Image 1: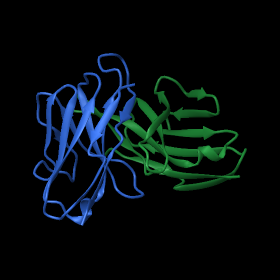
Image 2: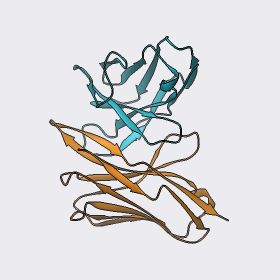
Image 3: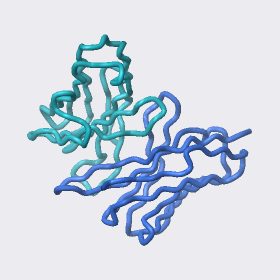
Image 4: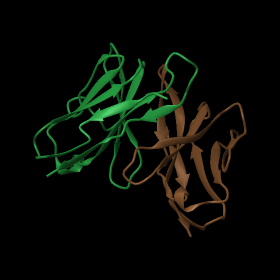
Length: 114
Length: 117
């Protein structure tokens, strides 16, 4: 079935350190993998995404890597700052019956300690 | 990205009643999605709302409980019917940005925080 697993569920890092969140997906046909950041009381915000035709994408301090063979992708945040503290969700695009949908991972609560 | 608004932003309702949530987008989009986010949990897809056809519901969600309307390409409603405290949640609508172009990005409305007493 359609499934996205995400680890860890919580992650605490010291300010300035790196954080890595990992996700695996079930359908090898999935071709798009976004990451969302959700601050308390706010809507999820798209922060970076990657398509299946590339292995890595970077945007300033954040990067996403994709391993299609293993069906997993990861979010990397470098030089973490207190404002990076939030819940992060990965997602995968699943195509079904001629249409598509996005299934989300269970989320990672990131705490950046000052 | 599309600008998405939802009404109401929050509501407190009594069990057994129904609430209709509205989602308005500032541009025409083919597909709109409704999600539920229970406290401290992830985003669970309720249904996909296509204009001109019935909504497609995910496993565990049924039309009698969550009827959806999609009268045009910029608007949708989700009704939470015969509510119980277990329906207390945040309900979010979502659209794909740049409809008609080769764009996969999906954006969320601000959400409706529902509390059922």
